[in-house]
Image (cartoon, rainbow over all chains, first blue to last red; front, side):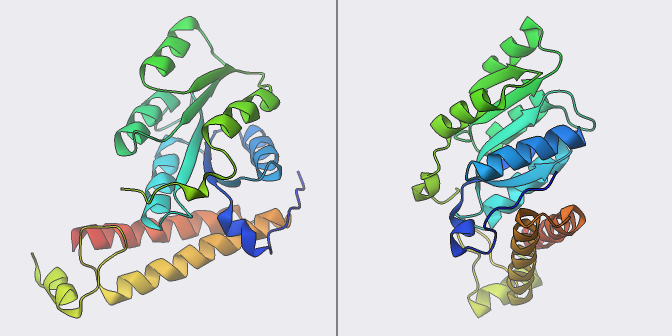
Length: 149
Length: 71
């Protein structure tokens, strides 16, 4: 999928960073494309461990690189979405997490809510709805957020 | 506090927002790989494949952070 946005603009670095953790390449590319076009700076991860690495690095690099939200698939190798949700929120309790799942039984949604996810979506995913939630919890103007602790 | 962090403290380097003292070289590495990560992300916006470049930058950043935390 070809996506061209203004990557040369100095304002690129002012875009709020969102981590997308998804093991399916095509799905990840769709999310990258839609969120990038929506104005976010998207860092891709193919599993929970990679996502935690990106959260950690982003926070260490300061305010402009710290993630403002995490979008994660539930079923992934090495570290699944629910474990990632727990670890990410243990590191940063204010980080909004949105889960997506192809196996959206009630238990999974209940676990997501219990662990602090702001929303959980079933696949096939309506990206427009995900974007609505994302814009609410991580507004594009959110770079006035505080320095990560 | 080991020799590495003691020497860093004498130099007065302190990572932004962190509680530990770090080597000047580590901070320089951090800047290099942060710039590489940004370049990879910008390349992707131009439709150029940069996934491996991005992953390498993250891995190197992670290595630097590990070093800094061990100091």
